[in-house]
Length: 516
Image 1 (cartoon, rainbow, N blue to C red):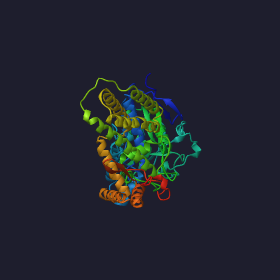
Image 2 (image 1 turned 180 degrees about the vertical axis):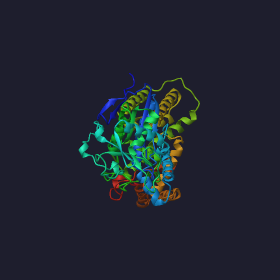
Image 3 (image 1 turned 90 degrees about the horizontal axis):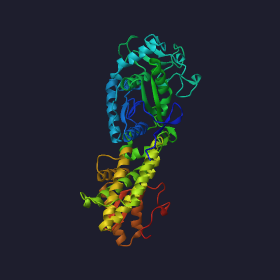
Image 4 (image 1 turned 90 degrees about the vertical axis):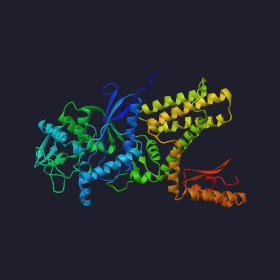
């Protein structure tokens, strides 16, 4: 049985379609990047983790991927912020572009092949505007150039909106201009204004409009026709609608085969955005939670659905990530004594059957419009099998021991392969990831490692003197802060845990007492 066909949802046709690239074995993909006027927020993480998964899975399927993600480093918001700070707009956008790249590296997002900046592609933008004017789809007004939506019958084909419903505003980037032939006409070139960067052009000094930038850069790097164009669903209108129109107005052969859009991140069921000042930056979140926990949280919801952010959800994701890497660490420690040894025996049939099913289900889920939610749920089965095998290995000898070692190696390889495709397998060791997760847990709890160890010692003393109310209280207090105590044969250890939604004293059954 061969691999399932990759099926993705096309926002243009509003249905799932079998993915067939323009060139066999190669994929061209353009994803709209950030406007770097501030630190990037979790909504940005949502988009770029989603398309990093697309990128990784296409590579996993054997495609050669050419991935382009731009920086809109000239924009009204950048200019406004720079003028307020007394800073050069390009210097400000360059600084925040680097911060964005740092965030992407933290989130394990693979770098695109090209990351073009608008300021480096002014000539390409001017050339495209000239073609649009020559083809009768744009007009000039006192140094400004506007796209005429009335000249393009297919306008609103992507969004499905009615032209009468459209408002000037361009996503908050364009002011109403009564000179325009149609209020929905949008700017391709903006005439120079005091305090703004500008470039010479056939229409006078000025700078590009927002939408033309991506059309020019995508065609420059990928050609007029390419496979995938992606971004957040808020870009469907006006940005991608306008891109589609102006690209085809410039070149009739322009075409994007698949339009892909990710859902929002909401806070209190309202879209999180800088303009509404209701957002958390990526750096805010990874100061408290491991970047892998944030990535896991984002992938727990299908990329097209909206995600509602809460610390509770991050706590859950962090707990799951800890379990994954504790399991991998325990597996590595169990296999360490047998490092370098090879055995002729096969993987146990039951283990091989589990691996085969997991692998088949993984391909089926990912090929069904990148269903990461199902994959993360299914991942628990091989992880449980690893933990069970590690326990069995400790009490096995001879051929049975060798079979368990082979099974453990096969399970470890399969889990790591899938984690790599999901972007959840960093270059650092499992032990290092666990250390980092514990460090973040201590920070959230407002405790140091020394303070936790002191609490463990106090609890041990209380238990020794049969003061179970005191020992129980210590355990519950730490549990409420996301610190779980585990009594093992060699003593008590601690690990991060998901704190209770309700304090343990209100629901004592959520944690067993010392005497239970």
